[in-house]
Length: 312
Image (cartoon, rainbow, N blue to C red; front, side, top):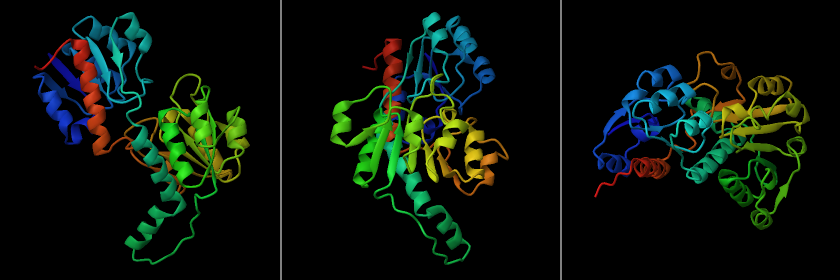
């Protein structure tokens, strides 16, 4: 069988997931994603299965694959917002993902961004590299208030770490785990507008769908507590970019720290690059050795299960 592999973190990270994939003796074709629709359309008819990242798996891609030999779309990761799930259902193409696999490593990345900003790590390193022994003034996370939008797998891990830092935690989610919020003393907010007005830091950990797209907009920015810092390790579409720039230009928010962008790799001359108080990492929140092996193994197991294959 012939398999398309597009995830660059799967491809670039050594580990036992490569051995597992090799053990099935597939013909594996590697392309470096995320792939645009037109690229996948040109090749999809060749493959029995795809281990994909954030590629544009549109209705056209699924229909063309289903009419040839495609049997399974195995998402390496969690978010399915780049896949046309209705089309997959219509054409009877199973779609799998790896829910909960990223929770620890992405939660760590939230705090990596928060600490890098609050302790001026990046700026201080740049000054040192330029031979300037300059000591900037940072801020503590202790006793600050952290807002979490999306108290799912990742959001809970963020809350646990916030509790360890001595932060006050306020969360917004449609579905509340009462045992968890009681254990970690999480205050529940009834609306995003109420939440953003109270917090010093805001971590976005919600899935992207029609209900959450653009949930951070100018209306909400105007309601934010002055000087808020927004951290996005989930999906770029949760945030309206113009609202972020508006907030920064009008000194309503202090910083935007993000691991995700609407178009990746980043476009040339992106407006975010003009702002010192925007920190960007290239979608690496889940890119650790440990997590790549976990995620890759899970994606392979999902693939072979739907291909009805074993390697014994």
